Amino acid sequence: MPSAKDGSPTAMSRTAVERKSDRELVVTRTFNAPAHIVFEAWSKPELFKLWWVPKSAGLSLLSCDMDVRTGGAYRLVFRHPISDQPMAFFGTYREVTPPKLIVWTNEESDQGAVTTVTFEEDVGRTRVTLHELYPTKAALDEALAGSAEALPEQFAQLDELLADRS
Image (cartoon, rainbow, N blue to C red; front, side):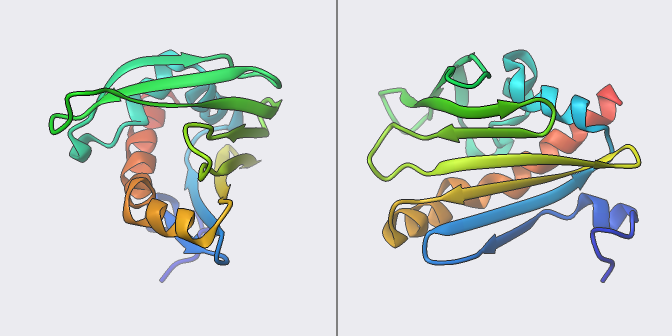
């Protein structure tokens, strides 16, 4: 199997999801776009909402408010067909360094992770590493049974968006 460094289409399209410890999840993928364009897809609400919601999940993104700067906040509100009530996800940006780093909190419950996303460019391609640190093993177990399993689909959708922008 090709490694992510060899630049082949198979390697570049591969999303690796790895549980690093009882509380840590790391997801990596290399995109065929420069870091500033990949960073924009994570930091501009009009782009973020085009790829973040996995199409297979049946969710609708009702609102996407993002102030992507150190000390800024975000709030995403979703609707799912099986629920009468919308679901809100929100938190604050602890550190933002364009186009290299975004760190945010997930504050909708006391089991929310701190998420760190790094963008490393190499010859016009960008390796994205998403690292989530959960407060407990149970919180990570729950994420792996739910939202985390959608990350490969989300990253594939981001790949499609970037192909149109590069």
